[in-house]
Image (tube, rainbow, N blue to C red; front, side, top):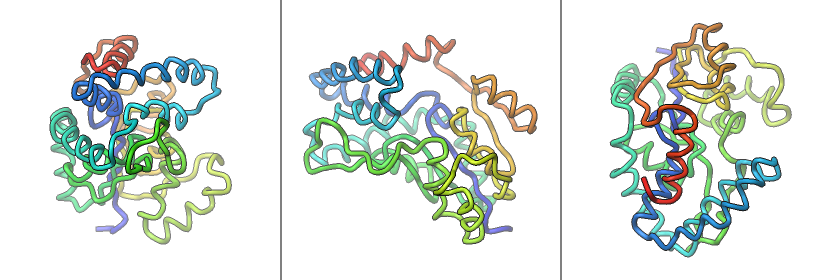
Length: 260
């Protein structure tokens, strides 16, 4: 088997039918309800995001103000229990089985997610991934009001950039034509043969285009669905706890308030 055979998974709304950062807020607020104060900076940050004055990195920094004053070891302990108690039971059973099958096929499994690494690393461990790539949050001995994010939010082309060191040398050389100088060149050719990627999001098009095969989980974006049909990517409709996009956003809201 070709040693450069990969299975690359997005996490939020792919392996689980939720966004894990909202579930984490819900989990922490159940433990320490007084932390609901963090909704105040969010009320300012969300309009700033809608006006494009804040990017996804800045919004995530504000959102993680929920960690304020927690000790590093407390964050780690909460993260471990959150993954074991909340996340793993939420993983689509069909995809759990598929992960085990991919392991038997000797695929190199990569979890590549925008979720914070302080809990994403435990998700990767629990599910048996070879590598976990996530948004890097620097944990202080006590957490500052605005989280320190190292580098960029792990999203879109940043997922490719961060994944390069985990790929074979010849693949790294090919990708160096696109990163870091001009990652948004026209679409690069498929270079990960006998490999497969999984996502729900149009933000992951760079990742989906990188592998020979791709699987979309509950896709919503018409442009993404159109490209999937043109390229004969597989589309799977798995369990969703929401009925439509509005209901989806409502669940994110009540999770952010600790009411889920």
